[in-house]
Image (cartoon, rainbow, N blue to C red; front, side):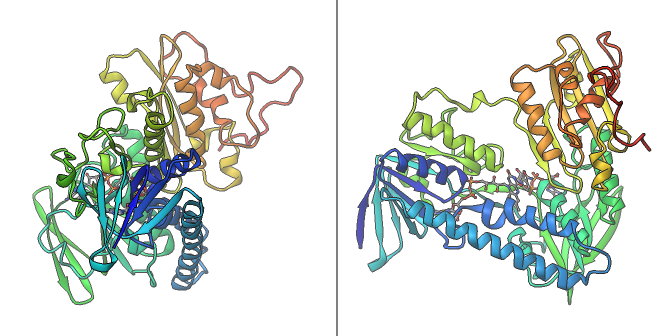
Length: 484
Ligand SMILES: Cc1cc2nc3c(=O)[nH]c(=O)nc-3n(C[C@H](O)[C@H](O)[C@H](O)COP(=O)(O)OP(=O)(O)OC[C@H]3O[C@@H](n4cnc5c(N)ncnc54)[C@H](O)[C@@H]3O)c2cc1C
Ligand SMILES: NC(=O)c1ccc[n+]([C@@H]2O[C@H](COP(=O)([O-])OP(=O)(O)OC[C@H]3O[C@@H](n4cnc5c(N)ncnc54)[C@H](O)[C@@H]3O)[C@@H](O)[C@H]2O)c1
């Protein structure tokens, strides 16, 4: 049995926890970080989340019709394994290698509000610290559908990033971020994918034109999408699972050899014995926090997915900044400081969004203009043609009184990059006209701003500005294709 003390104890090697651990250790604090699995140094994102899925996204888009599907898939999974294991090793070494940080592998459980225990019997380690940061992440929700949890065909997203063989048919239960990304990736690898989504339409938060175009693109790639599906039962039948669902009063069924639950993720607090520390949870099972991410015990913080906030790596990172500001800074930073946080759904092409949708802006009674154009029609953005991905559309919602950008939905090649510029413009009050009249590299996707912002449907009196409006006299006009 070993008894350790530290200045700061971090539970979970996720983005939030490790970012805080590095900074605190660099500031000379003695840090102990406890991670329950040697396969998870670095947390979900680099091991079983963002990194492997985005690498599979990349590989799957490179598959040619003549490639053998199984061979190509096996090669792709090998690439993912190599990268994730390199990242895992790097994550461990960079933290454990510091003089003031120690990583312990095991599951932490609270003994009291300052102490956790890891392991049992002779291997028991206790760690006591005046400050504790919880960063235990989230786990998939398995919807209470009869037969789903016990189906031998159930596969987790983790398994799908490490699978040895490509399933011939895959049913994805839930058409949110995780479900649509796996649907798009696996369909491109050659699996026949069916998405069963409970809501009446895909991506209900997005405007109908955007959600409809996402659906059209996925269906164009061969993904079968059934919305408004009320799944009633899952039955294993030999090599396949049969999923029964009701839609429009009729009962239907679909079969597949693999079944991915993608109906959300819940905060992980199992086994932590939060009660022993007096840390309260919300009715949804998240660790309850204030805007400084302090729990009901002010010396215990909770960052990332476990605190019930938006489940994105960059939010976990920002959570760490808030806690670090408490521990090393002025203690002013809060979750309320976040403005225009962008998101990207990595379908092909990706959908990146920020701020308000058109529907939300209108519901707020704002006087808006909407600038929108199909990617294939954006003459100022030949990049889409050069990489042979001209599907999608770009849409901006602009305040007609102030010319400030209220939101954007970019369903387009490079959208995950372009959206960050829009988010920055929103945060720093850069107007739509300024974005429209700026100089961008060529050929790039950002160049679309030169044109699309000039397409506002309900204007402030601004006339449409042509794509090449801010070129100097004598220069050639737009160098892109003349348009389809
Ligand atoms: C398939 C998939 C794809 C995703 N893609 C993206 C994306 O493209 N972009 C994006 O921004 N986000 C993405 N996400 C979400 C993102 O991965 C998470 O929001 C992020 O990893 C959360 O980080 P975290 O710090 O909260 O916890 P995590 O990274 O989940 O880390 C928590 C760690 O705590 C450990 N742990 C749990 N309980 C204990 C305990 N009792 N003791 C010790 N250790 C414990 C776990 O083993 C785990 O390593 C994706 C998620 C998934 C599942
Ligand atoms: N690119 C990214 O940033 C990325 C990628 C993957 C995951 N993530 C994160 O992980 C989280 C979890 O992803 P997710 O897709 O599991 O959750 P989600 O909340 O995004 O989507 C869940 C979907 O399942 C549907 N659903 C719920 N119950 C259902 C049922 N019984 N039958 C059919 N459909 C049902 C919901 O209507 C919803 O559309 C995401 O919210 C996101 O924060 C992010």
